[in-house]
Image (tube, rainbow, N blue to C red; front, side, top):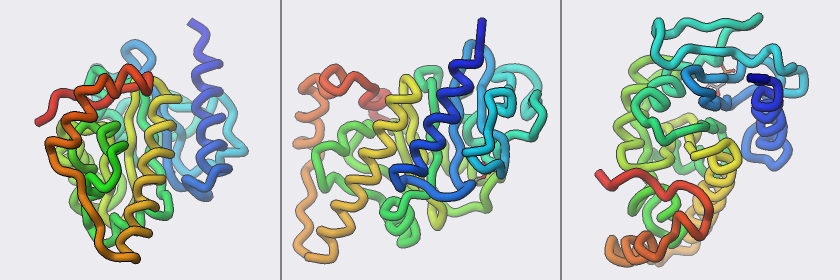
Length: 222
Ligand code: 13P
C-alpha cells in the first residue's frame, strides 16, 4: 500500500494545528495507525521541514520501541504506542500544547461537565494525568489511567492528548477540547460556574451523540 498520502496527512495536520493556534513551534506530535504499524512524527523537526519519508514507522506488536526511518520518533512514542496497543478503536492521536488546556493542566484540574460537548470525550469530564517527565514510561502509565473510558486527557504542566477513529476525528476533538477549556477558563473568571449533572451528560450521550458528530463518543464508561 502507498503510505505517502497518510504520511502527508500527518504533516498537513501538524501544520494545521500550529496555524490555528492549537500548538506552537516543534511542540506536539501526531500518530496514525496503519494496519499493524504506527506512523508518528519524528522528534524535534519543524513541521514546515517535514517530508513524507521523515515520518517514522513503529510496529504495534513487534519489538517494543523499534522504529524505522531517517530520524528517531517523537520523544512521546511511548504513550502513542501504549494507547494504540491498549485501544484498538483508536486510529489517530493528536498531542499538543494548547493555551487553555495547558493553563488548566497547570492548575492540575480536570475539565468538568461545564458544556454538554464534554460528552464527545466519553464521560462527565476530561481528567488531568498526573505529572511525569515528558517522554517517560511513567508519563505513559499516567496517561493510560487518565484516558480510561475517555477519548482525551490533559497532561499536568504539559498539554493535552485527543484520540479519534481517524486523524480528522482526533483533530476535531483537539479543537473542541481547547474550545471547552477556553469557555471553562472564562467562566471561572466570571464565577458561578454551573456544572451539568452526570444524568444530564448521560442523556446527551444516549441521544446518538456519536452518530450526529460522525466520531467516537468514547469507549464504554469505566
Ligand atoms: P517531540 O518533538 O519529541 O515530539 O516532542 C514534542 C513534545 O511536545 C513533547 O511532549
